Image (cartoon, rainbow, N blue to C red; front, top):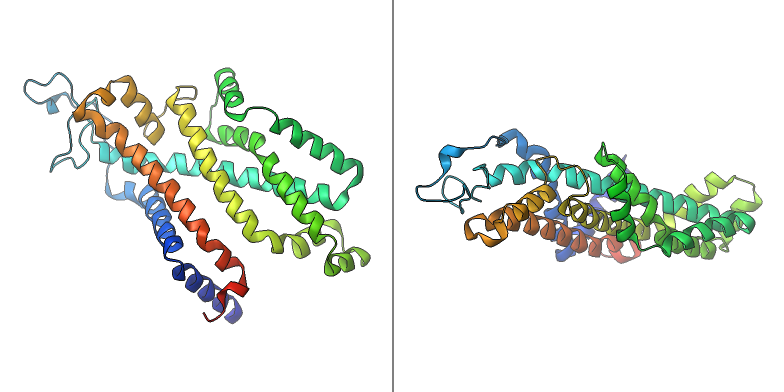
Length: 295
């Protein structure tokens, strides 16, 4: 326990030493915290409020005010409540997609490299075939054909199409590590493929895997928002992507009073993406003890 606590403290020091990475870490905590705990303090406003229409106004759109910090949407609903309640599903779905894609890539890449032969050829051929298919156009076609009863199925679809690139990189790294003495010793001792991959190989790839997992989460978020924006997946409020879609449909982009309905989720998504990018800059120090000298 003492060693674990010391490792955690050293990791946090390494994270805090990189100011950009620490800023990204704080940004991630902020968005996750607001999405998880915000609904406990801010009630969701899902009812149309005709009584909030201003005298002489043609729509219920309103700009930011003291009572409604981010203004009102086309139904007179508080935009702040939609922002607080709308991030959870998008973040969870993106996280699921990134985790599943990374898991598939790591398992398939490691097995292909360690087993070799026909298994390697078949798995590499499958990955190469998927890489030749334009990903987003294929997602558009599949989303228009399939009916997503759950966001989890959308995460599975993204993961099924996005693992090959990381798989090829993991395979190349494992092929290099396979020639190391300690891996050859484990093979000679017949410790078993799961033991060799999990205990001997993957720890040396952890920083690389985590960074690529974060990039997968970023890509998944972009694709999910894109599909929602185009109306190709079920629109269920509250959701940042749905806010952008309905805002465009209701003319918020042409109405100064309604601009906040589109700008708020766009800025939130951009800041969350930026936080992920900055956070990856400090991960190398966290995972590589040689870079923590003097901590």
